[in-house]
Image 1 (cartoon, rainbow, N blue to C red):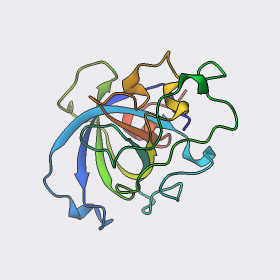
Image 2: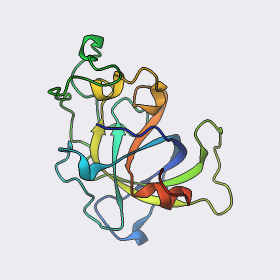
Image 3: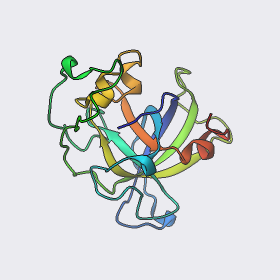
Amino acid sequence: MGLQSICLLLSFVAYASSRPQPSVFFSSPQFTGVATFNNYASQGNTNCGPKAPSNPLYYGAAAGDISPNISGGLCAGSIDPSLCVQGQAPASDYEGPSCPKTNCGVCYQVTNLGPYGSGGTTPPPGANSVIVQIIDSCPSTSAWNFCKTQVPADERCGSSATNSLDIDLGAYQALTGGAWD
């Protein structure tokens, strides 16, 4: 999975995935976490099949497999540094680990709490939100993630203490109000 390096601190709110209408929000726990951004259109495949959510108003996302509150289950494999043959990436023929599909289709309301590392836990006035639907997994045991040793673990789905979402690049401007560089 090709993660982007820009991150935001976000609040996740569970959403009823079986009903695409925004009117079906229900009260649920909130979690903080980190979001990275990925261009799913350029990705070869996703764990759940489709590269886009079922509702065109949502953005696709991958949940970190070791995230404490939003994981769909652990992906197969182990961290093997010998796979990191190209510096911060695996060999071109590398195929990532298999992952459970248990949270495919689950949706979350994601609210921008501020820049990565800001320590925000409450949305500031006028905070931007989007709805994401899980279309992929972000495995900690993928060489596409663990080979990025220059990137902090919570920015590459590698921290079991952090809820990690890798969100479609299209959501960046909606969440931040700024263009992707």
